[in-house]
Length: 266
Length: 307
Image 1 (cartoon, one colour):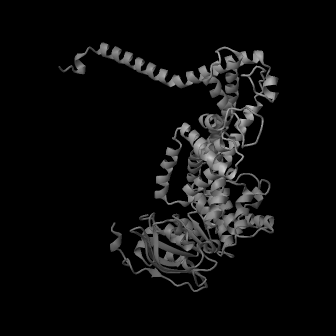
Image 2 (cartoon, helix red, strand yellow):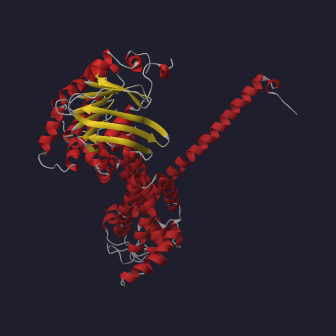
């Protein structure tokens, strides 16, 4: 199937401006790794305290995209970008990267707890951000928010690696929540988890969206449909379509989006 | 002349192959067992001669007497002076090699550009290959005169100079192995730390170094083991005076240096003086064995963490 000849031609994405307050604005974002262009001219607005799903086939640039939102790509020497990303109106590429990453937390594909105790995993992030008082309360609050407290409250000093995969991933979420970010980025957070652990994380994200702006990359279309309020479909480094999840799944404007969500490729 | 395989009667070919296989297997087995048999032989000789030594001298005297004078008329067999000598030079060496080695490893693994790391790593390993006799004369003829500029009272042969140079000698071991340990800490852990708003220093000291700690400890123990067993530097630069002191400015004698002293002299084989070197050698063997075993155990634990 020749995708380029179908529907909306590449270069004219269908992007809806959300009718609610915006947390992150992306304007004309293009990214290169050396000479390879990973993202081309991506522009859309991420609404505050909503779950925005980023979907698309492998290699479409969705991970690259969310790693721009907390300046994680700065760690890659070959990375180069143009365009603008604003967090609550302020240009993040003009801010101190550690400040950006504190305000925009990130959870990764594979659970990556530090080889420390459960308690230390959360306390460390607090300490490096200068929050040394009330550590115990902050740790408990973070674990409660991540729906992990009841399972670990009696073994806070056990190594984090002794937890199950799903618990480790919730610990990673708790670790991020502890430093009280405004935005929570999740890069395929359930791809290494079983269905029950996945369901727990999805429920958790829905609970969390009252307090945090959530951006989740997922290759699981059903997951995007279940939990997200808005969805962005990426293909070959371009944003093809962005609108409310309900509309994107029931009335996709681009035939490529339709082909992807109905499982005809990807 | 061409002889094709098909021309040889089949059974002969098979038999020949079987003999060939057996012969090759035998050769390989002999080669493989050389190291094991040598070790076993050394340990057997050590134990045998040490046992003979302890039939004359009590273990109690060996461990508690504060003098070591087996080559004099009035003989004392207290290993303490030699043991403190070894402890002193090893301690001085570690006080140099531990901070420098670990900081060098952190620089190599976490800060220096990849190209520079590729150039520096082999250079470190070349440093590890310098014959220790060179280090020994370096200590005696360069470092000691240099130290005398600052400490006029220092003796020509002393523990400080030998210890410092020995420290330089084990830096490559500690730096290179610690660098390996730091370098394999998964990228995902560093990313997790950066994503919490950590600075580079916080990521390195708070996450990467603790994650690599068993590998670093293993490197340190191996360095200590090398320092304890090091012979040439201390024999040349630290002196041959067994004395119970922790003063680094005077001549001392380490366990290894004593073995050299006796081996080079005209001590008759089979005499009690001669057997002392086996007793000392056995003590040395036990000490380095303990450190090697712990080093190996920590290295294995480290590998298991990141499999």
